[in-house]
Length: 297
Image 1 (cartoon, rainbow, N blue to C red):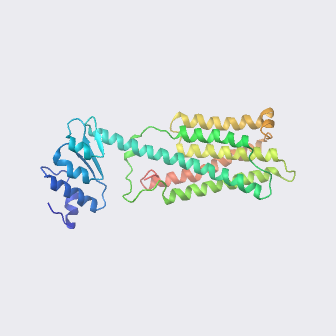
Image 2: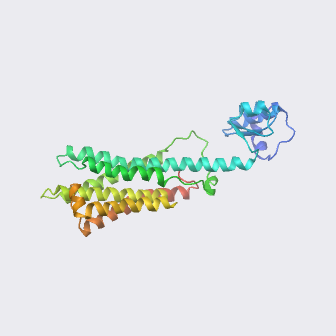
């Protein structure tokens, strides 16, 4: 079977091709691929082998499929149920989304952590983070990244239509949002540190303020990225905020951590910083939804 370029419209208008010979199936797959399509082929017999091997994704039946079909296929359905394909695609897309959100969070929170740790001493200020502070922050950051974004596959995962272009883990828009948000958190942490340090060089107060802003910013990012899907998001975020309140406001603990309890206006600034940091991420998600995607395709 030969297919010319002017057959594209005719092929797209056809829902079912019946009684096709192996060469025709193979030619149909090649023609669709030439038009930029990502082609998946399901089959169970020897006559399906050429198309299964040529397809981007070959799916063979595990129960009634021939050995030849199973050997050349990329995926073998052990239950011979086409619904399994749909569930697997939905779960795969959601898993990709979860990994993206987890790494977005890690980058957005580690950019200001690394920059402030390096730049503040270079600018002549007292060192910001002591080793115990880094341990405290990482005990918040890593459980958040590991637990919050492990959502089960959602039914709306199939509503999006991935691009046919080569897919990168982060596209240009997401990279800009990550960089912008990370730098914004960096500026807020530096400003809060310099403001609290003051002329009296109260380093304990400045450290406490900078840590509070960074923890609240992380909580805002967690809320914006997870949208509180699952109880883990609420529990982890509440635990992070509670740890900041306890370690900073309890005099005995704050003394051990080389911190000083904050005033009401300090906590208000930290809380508003968390809300402010979440706004670019929320806007990005809203804009992605307006464009008809989920922000990850």
